[in-house]
Length: 237
Image (cartoon, rainbow, N blue to C red; front, side, top):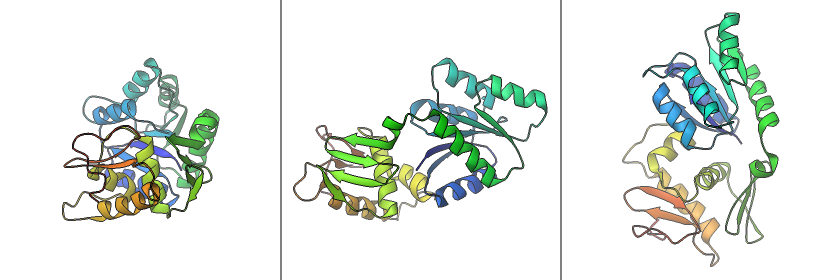
């Protein structure tokens, strides 16, 4: 499973990419402009970034690349652009891109290039196993253990847990979960998030385990082994 950030202002193309990657079991976040894309690229952990060169809001793809590299961010970046001239490709690579794919493109080739970049740059020891307290998640094998006891999760539950543990000790909103895990806009009447988190919590925090999945009232959820915030109600869902 990859954590993928797509920075692309063409909504149809972004949805096409996101849907294809999600069908392969990956977690995808989309930013439609350069400013928000740069903010996401700097703040969060990503296995790979797919980056368009021409973006709105006065921050283009080359600016994002040069900023990331200047600040020591080594996240692999695949530049995806309609700019196909040799000079354009050279500029993208020199700015810090790890690969450059010209639109229109083959989705199969895109995934193969992503896989090659991630294999070359991923630190296997950190990427394969994620831990918080006595909870261990192996991304490669998709096995989960709590205190050495195996926990069986459904695919959607596993993706939800990975997203929570990658954002451990931080509040994750319901909107973030819907858009990233389920891939559709927030419906204030929907309780799909509450239901799924409740099921996941029963498996992770059941059997007398110390609670790790906390409900932050009015905000969302947090996976943490630290003391729950004052507004937390771990058993509310």
